[in-house]
Image 1 (cartoon, rainbow, N blue to C red):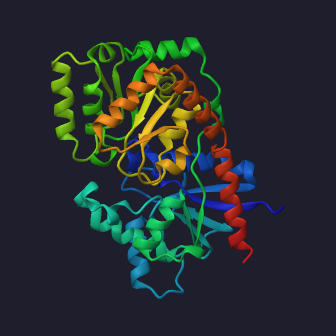
Image 2 (cartoon, rainbow, N blue to C red):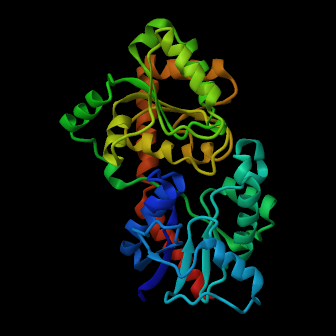
Image 3 (cartoon, rainbow, N blue to C red):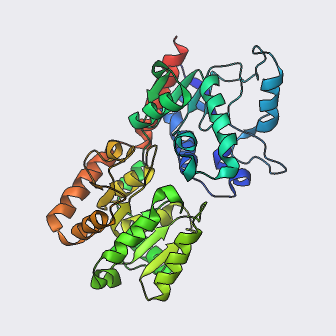
Length: 374
């Protein structure tokens, strides 16, 4: 089989533009960079230059994305950026016309569908860029079937031009971490095993305020025994949440916020030490933390909305994320009902084993080959 040379956009994992904070798109990009070579692809990483910051991961493209976009607007359609690759895969909205087929992964239509959950300073620009990306790409990858419907509705994309390739989790997460290393990580962050865990940026659509309210409904003895541990950076419009967390902690509540962790291995340890993973997000194009919790052998309660039931496939307890009572009941059930815990843990591990980044890379390479064969 011919080995493809694939240009991969890696701006989402460059230290300069990201400030060292890798979000879900960055996790996806990093996974493709790591696993595509085993799927028959030679990967050439490319990054858009960002001010004076040097590119570290990818080779710098000749111009900044802003300048390249202006060139697209000012030049005729036949003007294209020459690329020494079989095709280029943009893992986000940063797309310009290229002299090779372009595949774009569009993760969701959040800024257009639910603008109230997005930073207004970036909303119009991101909407415009995503619409442009949808038109310039020769083929689009969606990370869930739920996302396809949103992309068709909001961007007018022809469904025939979209392939669904689910996100994944690293195979290594399916193996239990080394006990002493895990214990050292938990001790470093002052964590006692068995806590309720949330992982994600603190922002409105993640519904962390609803999770906090649900946790505060639990019996006080449960709250004293099982902390609420929040892992994630402060995001847009989280000031009220942070005030409520501070107020609850001042009242003696057992809440721990970790806005920084020392790398992927520490995150894996924190997952493995949890008693229950709670992810009551209001909207997700996919929801990678579900798979990370499944692979870590932690029972999960999540939302019955957006893509999350598609990812869970019944392996998690699914509740209305706006029903704090139902969320609290599910969290409590996963601490008290041993058979329910076992069923969710076993089903979650099966689900995670079927959705690895290795499988994602092979399915993505298949999309490339199908496009190039046309």
